[in-house]
Amino acid sequence: MYKINENYSKFPGSYLFSTIGKKVRVYGEAHPEKKIIRLGIGDVTQPLAPAIVDALHKAVDEMGRGETFHGYAPDLGYAFLRETIAECDYRSRGCDIEADEIFISDGAKCDCGNIQEIFSLDNRIAVCDPVYPVYVDSNVMAGRTGTYDRERGTWSDVIYMPCTAENDFVPELPEKENAPDLIYLCFPNNPTGSVITKEGLQKWVDYANQAGAVILYDAAYEAYITEDNIPHSIFECRGARGCAIEFRSFSKNAGFTGLRLGFTVIPKELKCGNVSLHSLWARRHGTKYNGAPYIVQRAGQAVYSQEGRAQLKEQIGYYQRNAAYIFDGLKSMGYTVSGAVNSPYIWLKTPEGMNSWEFFDHLLERVNVVGTPGSGFGPSGEGYFRLTAFGSYENTVEAVERIKAL
Ligand code: MLT
Image 1 (cartoon, rainbow, N blue to C red):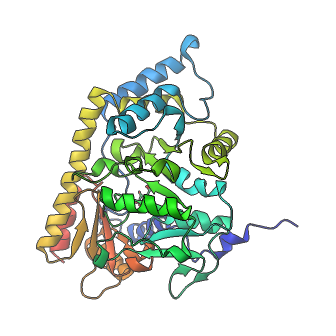
Image 2 (cartoon, rainbow, N blue to C red; image 1 turned 180 degrees about the vertical axis):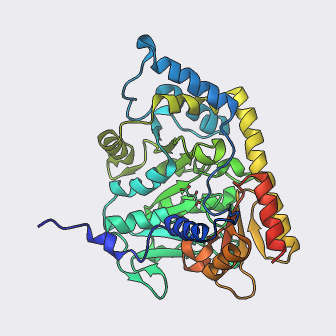
Image 3 (spheres, helix red, strand yellow; image 1 turned 120 degrees about the horizontal axis):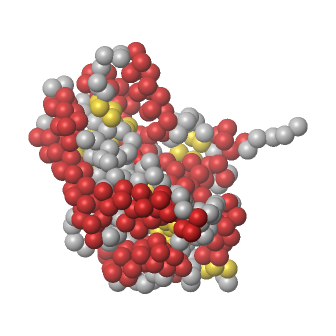
């Protein structure tokens, strides 16, 4: 008789965004006359930029002709895209990253979830609290997190690094005596929208190098950084090549949530003893993945073209305007708000002592606005709520007006 992976039975519920999706669906079916405004999951709403659409059309035409048809993509990605990324995202910022250290994939979520496979099961992970649920849930599936404490909402073998108003939602370094092996960091942060300075991130890199830990750095939101001295990549820090892996996405900077494209950077000198993590990930990628589609990789290349950059600057500006609108609107109503300045996420304290899920229900039922309960991201998120700037401007304005009228 076969057996299932029992680790899946340890989950207290479904994936956060599936739970929210279901709740909203049930509400919508019961109230078909209501116009629900969705500012929950960070999914973009603006159409692809014209430069990207042109690249897609051109690539589709190439696929339709024998001389320019492409079958399987190289499993680590086409050189034209890897070279472009190495130049535009890294070397132009002074980061020493080569094209062959970049692994193209169908998105950062899969890479963030899959990366744990190349590490031993007895590695101890540390996560920010609150945290993007994929980092923890993928380790639960692998059996690395111990048992779940329902009361506290924590896993016994995970080191939680609280991110609270007191530390500006940037975690303290873990104790050296109890150092984690794998440290997940995400800046600009999902869900709080907080950022870390270059000096702050350098401390993490130094810590990881001393402790023999690896930092798994999710930089999916770097395009939203507006302030100076906020690093766009962990490879801006000295010594990061010896301790860090970086994840990037085309979803939030170029609207690829439905097209799917991302990449992971693993420097060649990142080694455990004499085994390079680059070669382990290459082995995994080559075995389990057939490469992002040619047409999508060509679209990805267009993101870096002159027209692409100009059009995307405008598109990101559109979402930044939404973020500022929500931030200012809530602040003027007396809410305690953070995020937004370098991030598409707005993080607010729930009013009147409501917990995160109570506020979720309150907003959904009273004004038909959907957000994400902070407690869904971890125990330190209790009493907080996340709104996203990825709606249309009109819906964003309407949502703020509706919240004002509460
Ligand atoms: C979020 O809402 O946190 C993100 O959209 C989820 C994701 O990017 O997978």
